Every structure is written in structure tokens, then in C-alpha cells.
Length: 248
Image 1 (cartoon, rainbow, N blue to C red):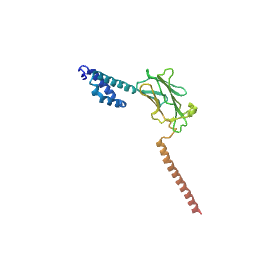
Image 2: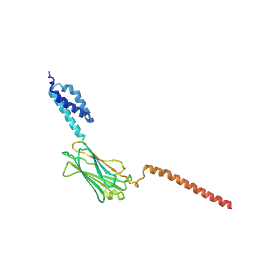
Image 3: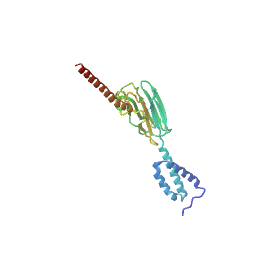
Image 4: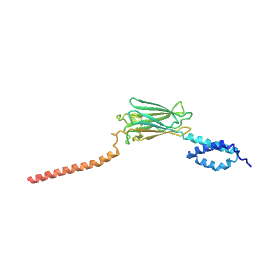
């Protein structure tokens, strides 16, 4: 018959188990494992080795779960005459350099200590509007060599008056366009931990595309003005005919 755990032993194991349970409950992806371990608890608690094994399993799962949660959001802001970069989170180390010459440019080196960089999003060639006619911005992300635990990010912004196509400016057609809101550029994936999210927000050229409210107003008012002008012309013609008839 298995011996019961001595009263002096469970304190450390129970404390570790409690911490592990609380951390695991925050990880939805580990709920199945958690429920299985909970169901098996009456069997584990019958022996000193079983209780220690369970505590180790819970703490290991909690550590792995918290590691998977590591992720940052990196945002390129192009709302003024100067580009800026914002980091939300602290999982990665960022080295940021922004310059303004003929174009505005920010280069960012993203490093996660001891973790290999894996996948980067495809290049984005961003147009001023949905017509994809004129280039506005470019984003390129690549694993940084020789440091395999880093990514190199490049964000270029052209002047609003440049009026160049993406092919002329960047050597490739535009594949997306700016809306004025925060938009996604993709994710950086790592061998360990969560994927970083890359975003940007650009100001929209007011002359590129009329706002929906402005377009609706023009569509409504222009026919009305045209109708008024036509009626006035018709009355003037009829009046002239009437006057001419009176003289004859």
C-alpha cells in the first residue's frame, strides 16, 4: 500500500503546483493538458515521486506557455514630415535609425537574444490610393546576416509631390495602398516565442481621392445645379419666343 505524503513535504510541491496551475490557466492552448493533469491528480498525490513529477510538469508547461507569449508590435508612423518607429512590448531589442534626404527612411534591426530569426513578410510597395497609380511607401524585411538572431527592417516614404509609380520608384508594382489607419505589414517569426507584428500608419494625400462624404456631396449637388441651370435657360428661351411673338 503506497505511503501517504508526510505533512512536512507537500508545502514546496503544493506551492509549485499552485503557481503552475495559475499560469497554465492563462494559456487557452494548454487547457486540454491542464484538464488531463487535474483529472489525474488523485493518482499523483498518493506518492512523493508522483507529486514531484506533477509539479515539474505544471511548471514546465507554464514556462513553455509563457515563452510562446513573447511578442512585440512594431509600428512605423508616417503622419508628419518625419518618420518614427514605435515598439509595443519588450521581448526584442530594437536599433532604430531614421534619416531624411531625398526620401524619408527608417532602418530597424530587431534582435531576440539567443533566438534564431525564421520568417519575414513579403515586400510591401504601398500606393497613395486604391488606384495603385502613385507610389507612397516601401517596406522590406529580411533576416540580418551574419547575425541569425536578427531581422533588418527598411521603411521608405516618398514625398507627396513625387508622383512616381511604384515601378519607377521601387522597381516593382504597388501591391497595397494606404488608408490613413493603422495597417498590417505582416509578422516576424522566431524559433522560440511568439511572432512580432509589423504595422504602419501613413497620412493620406487629400488630393488623391475625395473622402466618401465629399464624393457623395458632389454626386448629389452637381445634378441639382445642372437641373437649375437647364430650367433657367429653358425659361429664358421661352421668354424670348414670347417677346418675339408679341412684336409680330
